[in-house]
Length: 616
Image (cartoon, rainbow, N blue to C red; front, side, top):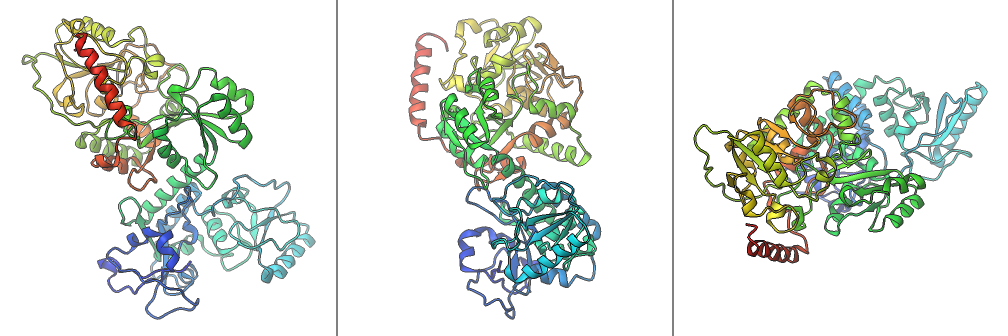
């Protein structure tokens, strides 16, 4: 790929322009981030080097295709039309081999650099000990046939495959269709005739290369030379970033693409959420179908040979049995724990999701992916440091699930009296149906807390969906007397945490948000964060029992970093949670949906009826 002409950052002020083909302006608009403050030059090149011009190529750092988009994150830059070749041919004086080995390991672990659209299946290798790559180039056919003959004469069993990076038609009879290069490299067999891009990935993976310019090359030195000519740009912030950060972004995208391409159909996704779910599942495969009928959804998934993704709260009870009978893998989808700036009930699309192949995270009767992760995952020091920083950022920014605004009234508690915050919940919510014990209603929760803490000053905060008139769970004013000392209506959650001493809840996410802020939490049900030694648990035990004791940062690492799938509402690309946290400063990125006005009228009428009946 040729490159364009941009003005580099101040440290690169002496760099010449970069050749950019006209088409790249439309297909790769993020290139400007690699060279901030530069004007772009466009125009075709005749393939020969031009004085004072640099060229770029993605090389082994190909970005995965996410739907119609393929955004570059790392580029190799040099002074000729073949930047990768020039970088490898002219290694810099000082090679950082340790860094190169770390990047190579990350490239291999993230399975980065594969061309889009190739099947991800391991070829049957049988007794083969060598792989001969069909170059798909008539000019190289003779050399490939000579290699094949030599291997056959030597009695070496050979697997004949098309090179995954070749663009032409096969030229060797009997060569198998190309597969994803990492599926090929997983076999660990010696490669013959590998293209340069495949050879570079093979060096990163430690797979032997029999011939070509990189045969016998020192892998770390080769990659160090390549990294010296490589630039990285953060697609979320539109600015240069470190190569390691760029590799992390590509690894995240590759994982999300691999996950997304496995789904053939979606069930029960509300229309206002579908665009965001399409972005969540974007891959190089056809997008999944969105269906409302369980029967049709299962049939469609079976026909396409993929999995079914169902919105957990609206899925029928017999859906697992239907999927099992049809041989269709079933996965579950719910909103994530840092969702949006505004209510989902007001048709604001969320930007984080809980995607689980074992079961909904809120159901303690079966082990979800989240519960399994919390029970078994290793939490290395670097991950815990990241979790600590993320937790501190959540607290500093005052971020909660919905991030609603409003003023906090004065708390009327006498000095020295223990203050307990009781958040109301939607009583027909799936987390209550599955996660509650004998305390299942907001009124029952208040009674239980009053009995457990008769001298405490209890603050009751109705759920915002209930206050808005959208969901069930309202308590009549007369019933609150003697149970709640103060009712907090229309109050944002985050500021309250600094005004109370503890939180009591059934299964509300407010309990988790309170833990992030160091508050004691009592759970009268069994939410995902109960049972790990961080809460006082009065609900039924989970199945299987949660016996591992976690630190707060281990819980944060699992629940906010490793488990959720986040989408940047600005770029619409998969992002780490830190980016989503920054976007919470932009409520305009979470606009109400098309039906929001109708929903608002519904809420107004419901609130009016409640007022007339004396429920407020």
